Image 1 (tube, helix red, strand yellow):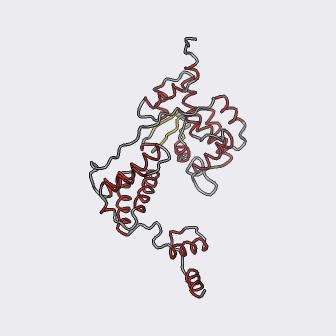
Image 2 (cartoon, one colour):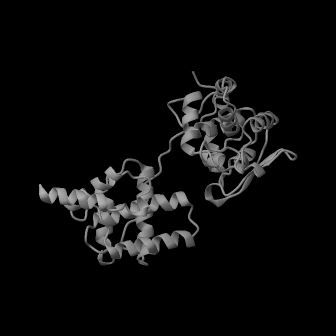
Image 3 (cartoon, helix red, strand yellow):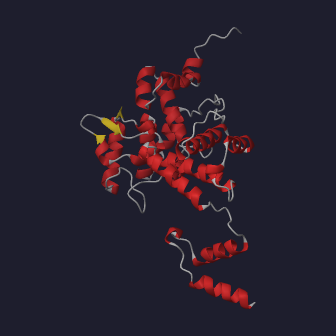
Length: 312
């Protein structure tokens, strides 16, 4: 009992490290007790932590996006934690291959991410040639995008009373913007004179210009008068940027609870195709590098499929 009391008193005196952020004292105390009961739980040894630092520097040097960097680092840390006390520099190709072969992947997308992350560690963190490890990616799934009828979307949008929510979803659908592009839009990106929207540093570090609808412009002006946003077109409740999670939430609330806001992007391009817009123009608006990516919308277009003369 005395030892337990001394331990708790010691924990009370301990100050949580700066990285703890908003963790409560109870959470910190629990973590201290856990570390005392379980020596080195999920701990990455010092040398392996240095390898993580090298990877972080390489991500910056190679200009990886923050989202990709965080994603890859998470998988790299998972691999290093699986080694326990073993130093990664002492791992051979078999250790890497065994880890990948025994990994319980939940999807092809996750499998690609894990393979890419471990390959990054192998190539850039350890400076090794990966000729002895099979980093082959799985065959991609040929899934068709989910599409919602345009009239249904317009009806749903017309019933939204919250101006900010209405502006976000209407703008997203109008030119098929990605949710990351919506939250990163700045006021200066809206060119009302030329009726254009500048999309900067989008997927693949690419910029592009998309048309601005007069209907959307009128809605944005109405929204501006009501909210007076600063710097970013859509501000959050406590930050300058509206969050991706909030965008997903309002989409599920107003449009469809069973899909994601990215469905608006697919629906926008499919509806453009059905209205007679040239596929090359849709490719430009979408920001697709290859026309093959845009051609997928021909497979889900009801207008195109309805023209097929079936044999019976």
